[in-house]
Structure formats: C-alpha cells, structure tokens
Picture 1 (cartoon, helix red, strand yellow):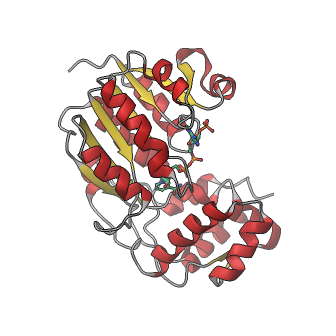
Picture 2: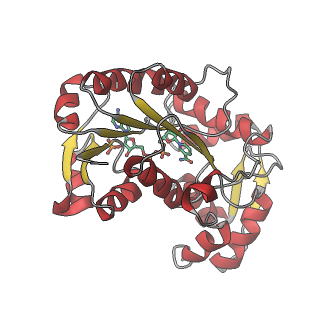
Picture 3: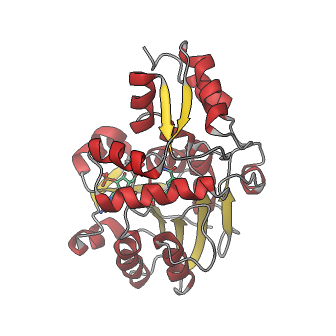
Amino acid sequence: MSHEKVLVTGATGKLGRELVPLLLEAGVEVTAGTRDPERGRALFGSGVEVRELNYARTETYDAALMWADRVFLMPPPFSPDAYEAIGAFLDWAVAARVEHVVLLSGMAMPEESDLPLRRAELHLEGQDVAGTIIRPNLYMQNLYPGFIYRQIRQDGEIRLPAGQEGVSLVDVRDVAAVAARALTESGWAGRSVTLTGPRALDMHEVSRILSRHTGRPVAYEPIEDQEFQELLEADGWRAGEIEVILGLFRSVREGWRKPVLADLEEALDRPPRSFEAFAAELEGVWE
Ligand SMILES: NC(=O)c1ccc[n+]([C@@H]2O[C@H](COP(=O)([O-])OP(=O)(O)OC[C@H]3O[C@@H](n4cnc5c(N)ncnc54)[C@H](OP(=O)(O)O)[C@@H]3O)[C@@H](O)[C@H]2O)c1
C-alpha cells in the first residue's frame, strides 16, 4: 500500500505529539495541523511540515489537506460544539478525496446517545470514505501535567467527583501506537476499537500508587459536582467546558469507564502499559 501523506490534526496535543514521531518512524510523510504553526515548528523541528489548521477557519483547510491521503481527525477538547467543529472539516476532507479518516472518539458513549463524539462517529460512518474509529478511555496523562497535578502538588489531595468507581485508564502512548497502525497498515477500514489500560483503578488506588512514587502521601477525596464546578470556575474553565467535564465524571461514577477490553492488546500484540509504570516515570516532577 502506498502512503503519500498523513495529516495529523490536533498535532500539538497529548496524543498528536506522540503520533507524529511514530508516523515518521514508519516512513510516512506527515503534515502537523495546529492553530499555532510557530509553536508546532518549535515542537517538531524541521522534519515535519507544520500547517495552520483551525476548524473555525475554513480558509485554513485546503493548505492543511494539501496532498494528504489520510487524516487523523482529533476533535477539540472539552467542547460542547466538537461535532460542529470537526463535521465541516470532515466534509471538506472527503470532498478533497482523502482515502482514509481515523477519528479519535471516546469510550463510554451509549450507541443511541447524542453526545458530540457519537454524532461525529455517525457522520464519519455516513461518508463515502474509509473510516476507523478509536475510542480510548481517559488517559493516564490527564494526571500530569494539568489540573489534577496542581491539586496534588498544592494539597497532597485529589478532589474529583469520581465516586468510588474504577477507571481502566489508558496510556496515551498506547493510543498513539494504535492510531499509527490504523494510519499505516491495511485492514483498518470500517474498524472501531475501544482502548483501555490493563486494570480498572478507583481514585483511592490511583492515589496509593502515586504516593509510592511522589515521596509524599496523596489522598483521594470524592466531591460533589457543585464543589468541582466551583473549583473549575476558579481555575478559569468556561461553562460549556465544565459541563463536558462533569459529564465525563458522571460516566465514571456510573461505571461506564471500568471495563478492561482486549482491543489494544490485539492491535499492538503486547499488553497495555500499566498505571504503575506511568507513575514510576513521574518521579521527580513532584518536588
Ligand atoms: N484526554 C483524554 O483523556 C481523552 C480520552 C479519550 C478521548 N479524548 C478526546 O480527545 C479529544 C482531545 O482531547 P485531549 O485531552 O487529548 O486534548 P489536547 O491534548 O489538549 O489536544 C487537543 C488538540 O486540539 C487542537 N485544537 C483545539 N481547538 C482546535 C481548533 N479549533 N481547530 C483545530 N485544532 C484545535 C489543539 O491544537 P492547537 O492548540 O495546536 O491548535 C490541541 O493540540 C477530545 O475530543 C476528547 O474527548 C480525550
């Protein structure tokens, strides 16, 4: 199979920055799409073509898609309008005759739900293009860097509305590895995979594992939505984003994010990375 070029949207994000080097290693030419090409060039160096791509600006679409025959499609994070944002771009890419679109979606969506990412999946399935849907559980990398990391450093405490339920957190590097295979190997058209880590951990277990590696005690305190909303507001999050985040934690409390599935191991021919290994790598960031 010939692969001329892959456009990676969201290339500077947690997943995109892992995916771009994997595609280069596989010998594929890559365009990295970002709203801030200068930041993209600083991140990737000279081996990657970086193009401005902003879903809100259709004038950026053509140059980003130039010569691309495959697209990794990343919805914007925490956006209640994620479907509208990527739907228009997907239509544009199909009209530009890309051959294969790999859509990043998410775990924990009932088939009949009208959540933005579920609508994006159905939109892709209705297009005249080969499609693959990747549905990861929450990433381990949400714990560092970001909001939760700041909570731990300041208070030695994780305060989330996650109840007592387990989550089969997945390492974003494993998700990127599956995406790289879907973009470079045959046999992925029409496939959907749900990617989880090897074990469901509740937040008490997450805290215990982090404690072993931070050199300080970390505790989990389950909180109510209202308190979490206030914490997020104080941290500068917008109302629409907060609603999406509260929905994610509702899905945790309802047990939707607990299953451990075999898709990742089947795709990579090796077990998923563990949270223990991820936490061990973080030693040194807690001082
Ligand atoms: N985080 C998780 O645990 C997780 C798990 C499963 C699924 N997901 C899904 O993954 C998606 C991204 O979330 P994330 O947490 O991975 O985010 P992230 O690491 O912050 O990356 C998101 C990327 O989207 C790009 N972006 C934002 N707005 C854009 C726009 N208007 N036009 C073009 N690009 C735009 C940003 O790139 P620039 O700033 O460079 O433009 C950024 O690199 C979400 O839909 C989320 O539901 C996330």
